[in-house]
Length: 485
Ligand code: ADP
Image (cartoon, rainbow, N blue to C red):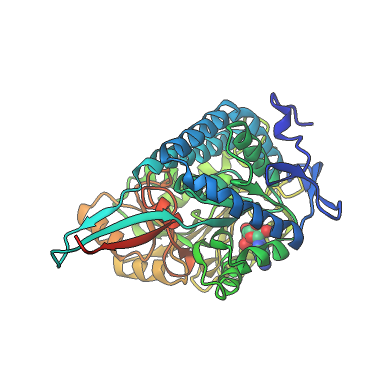
């Protein structure tokens, strides 16, 4: 079982509502399981409408005093929270691996990455500058101030149980907003652990609340409440559409970080080793379960065979197993549905002419372990071209010209991340500008950090997280026109 230096990170009494750790009104709970072995880690509260409504009231009350603090003081709270997260990095990583499955090294990386948003937005809290606009009339002075948007809510996914929360909560709290978080049902323990540390950092009751239970009921209350003025969601495009519809009646401000279908393009002039390295990171990190994972690898004709061979060789070295084992580089997939999707994408691609050059089936370890897979000469008519696989499958598509691959890369309703490898400066500019994506990695498979704006175009979402733009999502602009000067 899970041994933590700070046992309270796992053993709180329920959800964090109005500064108390509480059970559901009904007393009902649901189980959180370890995807690597199916064991139940613990039970968490099954809350619904009534508890969410109370959380909204508490968030509203807490926001009055939270926004009245100086930015410097809010910044200090965030700094303490950041320090505590880094102090307990190892415990948080263990908890994350237990409920999510990723290898411990990746989990440690996520804790640090997640914490970096708290550090960054703690600093940005002090830089919410206004403006003085030169007036067209002599008796007036025109000012712009920025104010917190109010009570906010976050609904987050299971693939980055810490980072997807801190990327939202840190700018919200920095701006002077309060936030109610509904983590994914698969991974609520990391969220609760963040809540424990937020309390220890002294963040006042009601500023940050964490509620688990019936996603639809909790989501409906958060979307429909006129008190909640902003919702930030990371998850599937399908659920994003539902939430956006539900938010229409209250004209809620929305940030949506939805699905991707990232192209990863290797041009003939690429540095082959760098491209293979980039593909490994972009495709196989978190067992392919990230929204910025390369989903379609386009490889130019002249380099195709060499790339396929080198990539397969690297993929064959991945070590599949429980994330707690030091040598493991690929953990289990999150659940059975994930495995079934991967299987159906492979079967469909092969039926449409692809050749399987590495992996391709469930791993001998059983459960939700899957062999890291490479498919060559996949047809653009395959399902895997249109849908996010969210698993350890690298489908290689062959192309000849720049125009052809740009058209293929953009042939999707998604527009989150894209990657390409080339050493030609003209081509780099042309392709970077032509890709209809919110983020483009050139000669790298790893682009996320707290100082850069993360987000998508087209149906991959709305808004940006991280960077100095990230805090704007939690601020309203107020124009003050002072006349009679
Ligand atoms: P995934 O397919 O990665 O699980 P989802 O979009 O289904 O992505 O889930 C992301 C988050 O959205 C989770 O916290 C989940 O509980 C929540 N969610 C799913 N359906 C709804 C819904 N109808 N209303 C509110 N939240 C939802």
